[in-house]
Length: 406
Image 1: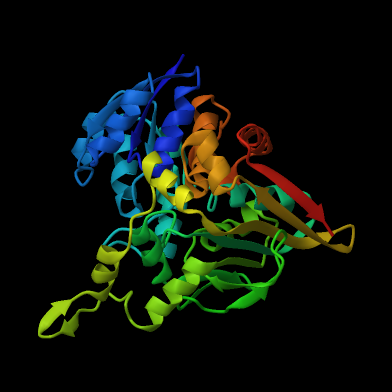
Image 2: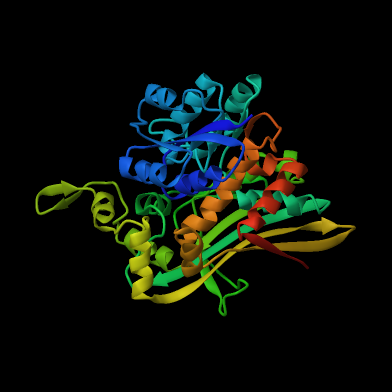
């Protein structure tokens, strides 16, 4: 029977999911809910299954009212809404999906939050016979799938390294291709690694390394970054990843280097600064001045019309272990579209396209009952059949994987 889905937050990722699900015969209706009614209305005007709703998601009852009758709730909001949307899903007996998390002001820290998700919330969803997929974009998301796929090819796993370089630079100034508030918040957050069987917390921009990545003609600088994978993979190491000992997430690119300059000047701090007798938050000033990420087609068209200075990038998931007594390294590179190609095909930026497609295929798998496991699950927990379906469907959308074994 076709399913009704509710997408709470239809920004870059949520809107991409809506477009993909509009094509799926197993979807009957898509509730597109956002505080920005224009974003929701744009989808209703262009998609025959979409219904636009304005929502203030700070109140759980508002989410419940909007999503009533939904078989699946997709959370496209920032991570500080995750607990509210999950609670609404449980109240409505709906499956659930988000892109990253968890975090809440005054709540547990990121590590304890994930422990709580993988234990308490997992049990709550499982008891109701519901599936909840968390961290389901490109990274986290596809990266976790690739890590598990490679781990299953080995007898032991020593190290998983995720290395991402975003080198797309336009002549029209764009600081980030996704929300500057989210991006700079992450840049100012503690970083996570899993080292010798322990989750290690470090300062922002820690442990820089020069990395040679396929498709880039020179070594590039990458830094530790605040991301989910070292936490979930560390917590699930023995259960799904052959007892992996080390997990690293490294990120770099021109926008990262700009962010480092802001960080070094104290401009990413929330601590009030006295400016001529007025107390101001440096972070709030930077966010107020930062241009928003190009979101609507006319904004991306303007970027392309001005031309590009540089268009390069890499997305690597490397898994190091052993098989038959020999050391083995498996490199997985994601191949996706550049800005011009992505916009021509979908009207989206390259960032929205790759991340949105990755998220949309998780939604498709849920809608089409290809994920049969119950409870709250990070992507590395999915079984072989679900992972196979995921990678096959993703390839149909132009996001493919090149795998090399050394």
